[in-house]
Amino acid sequence: MDKAVDKKLLSVVVPAYNEEAVLEIFHTRMSALFDALPNYRCEMIFVNDGSRDRTQDIIERLCDTDPRVAGVNLSRNFGKEIAMTAGFDHARGDAVVIIDADLQDPPELIMDMVREWENGYDVVYAKRTQRDGETWLKKATASAFYKLMKKTSRVSIPQDTGDFRLMSRRSVDALLQLREQHRFMKGLFAWVGFKTKAIEYRRDPRAAGETKFNYWKLWNFALEGITSFTIAPLKIATYLGLFIAAFSFAEICYIVGKKLIYGDVVRGYPSMMVTILFLGGVQLLFIGVLGEYLGRIFNETKGRPLYFAQDVLPSRISNTQCTQEQQ
Ligand code: UDP
Ligand code: MG
Image (tube, rainbow, N blue to C red; front, side, top):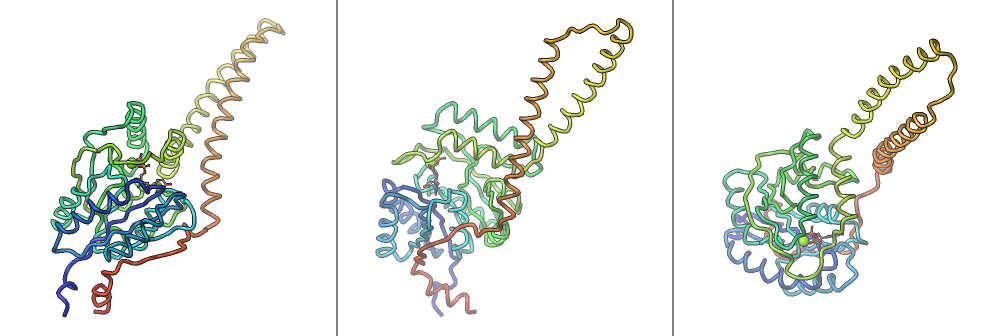
C-alpha cells in the first residue's frame, strides 16, 4: 500500500476575486508552508469568483505546474461567502482551512491550527490582536457590529475574527448542510458549534491589490448578519409600538377630558404635526425592517442553487486519495 494513503489530507480553500497581483506570491508562501508539513498531503483550492482580470489564467497555470493546486471557476461573481462555500463543497480534506488570497492572514498560522486540530479541536479560528493598514472608522464600525450581534443573537460570534480558520471534516460536513442563500459565514461557523479554539495573530495589511469591501458592502454585510441571526429589530418594533400605544392612550384621555371640561377649542396644530410626522417616520422605518426580512424570505423560497461552477480542475494528489476512498 502506498505510504501516502496513510497521511491525512489538508485542503486549503482560497476565494479569489481580481487577485492577479497576489496569487503568485500567495502560492509561493503556501507551497513553502506545505513543504513544512511533510506528514500531511496538502492541496490548495482556488475559487475564482468571477474575476475580470487574469486570476483564472494564473490559477490554470498554477494547476498545470503544481499538482497540489486545484481550481474551481465560478460562472460569475457570487461574493466571498458563496465562493467559500464552493471551496468547501470541493474540498475533500480531513481538515479544511479557509484563507484570504491577499496574505492578510499569515499562512504560517496554519501550522498552529493543525497542531490544535490534532489536539482534538474541530474548529480553530484566528483571532486578530491588531489590524494594521485599516482605518479607524473600519475598526470602530466592526467593533460596534460585533457588540450588537453579541447582545441580540443567541449564537456567540467571536469578535475580531475573520473567516480564517481550520475546520475538521465533521464540522465542514455540518456546515455544508446549511444551504441558505443569505450566507453570513461567520455566523454559520458559530452556529454549527463543535469544539472550538482561538489562536491570536496580528492581521497584516494586504500584500498587494485592493480591498473589495467598501462601506456600502460592509453595511450590507452587517445587515445580512443581523437579519440572519436575530429577529431583535422585529421585537424592537413590537415594544416600541406597545410603548407608543400606551402613551397615545394617555394622550387620548387627556385630550378628550380637556374637550369635555373646556369645550371645543381648536388649537394644537404643532402637536398634531409632530405626532403625524413621528408616527409616519416610525411606521416607515419598521415597514423597512419588515421588508428586509420579507425580502430574505422571498429569496430563500426560490430555492435556487447557491452557485454554478464552469470549470473544476481537481488537484493531482487525488490518486492516493482515491485509494483511500475505496477502502
Ligand atoms: N473575495 C471574493 N469575492 C468577492 C470579494 C472578495 O472571493 O466578491 C475574496 C478576495 O479575493 C479575498 C477575500 O475574499 O481573497 C477577502 O477580500 P478582501 O481582501 O478584499 O477583503 P478585506 O480583507 O478587505 O475584508
Ligand atoms: Mg483583505
